[in-house]
Length: 379
Image (cartoon, rainbow, N blue to C red; front, side, top):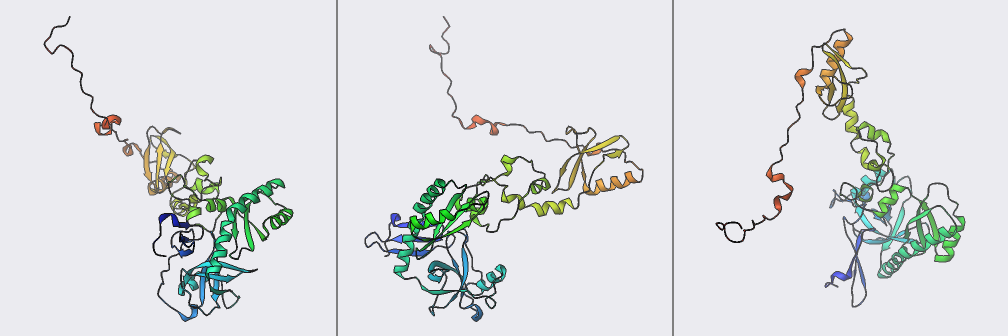
């Protein structure tokens, strides 16, 4: 199976693998594809072996589901192998994404202690029969999700089925749903079991997790952060926008999930650090030529802009945080500086040249010659 056509290759980005089908025999070759999934990992300790972590592996399933397993098969397992692992009921099939000392580091980060708790086992490497059943189960996911939405709507339940994940042996499925409130889906589980003849597990997710499952592009032009790398969603409040002096416009602050954008939290720490060095101005600065009112603050530059007219941006005078703090100290002592006039900010003048003209790329129009020649008199 070395000669493949483009039509025989399918990318399964939900599980991070490629499915290559031989068009003649119909056999499928599943290959691990690093970087094709949200939970992509890079093993910085690749090639380093430690006996302590020799039998521990990280196994990835669909979307954001991962787990740590111990090799009980006696077989030699490495990154990229498809393995059959222990499940609550039956068995599951996943892809090994980490091995060696990196697994130990990830276990410490996740708070998993193999000496204190018993990890599930890796039974064996996946055989062709296991892979075939796994692919048959995957092929049922889309149809099952559509049908499950119809069954939920027939019962009048206020919920939305966002995704369906079948277990490797095809005997169980996890239904990911989103709902605003509490949902009584006991009858729904019975209907699912009768309709699909499988064991059913319902798992509630939030709006951000649903957006991560669906994916898409943000207003920045890049892939959604929730679909790219975020796995732990922290609470986001409008206080993060106020700290960064952003306009509280719901249409601009909300992401595709309808919640506040995750990127609002990225620079909050830098702004809070800058805020700690900026003095609080609750009253105008007292000067010999009048009062100066605060009209604007450049937080990251730690510069405050004052004007002699309250609320006016016509003529502003920039002062650094240290200068404002010094003037406030003088005002508390009853002293007043002379003026701020020497700190006038002159706005740069922009001149539109020919290189900025809108029609600079248009072809030049040829001048029409008058009939009769240049020297012929007019009638």
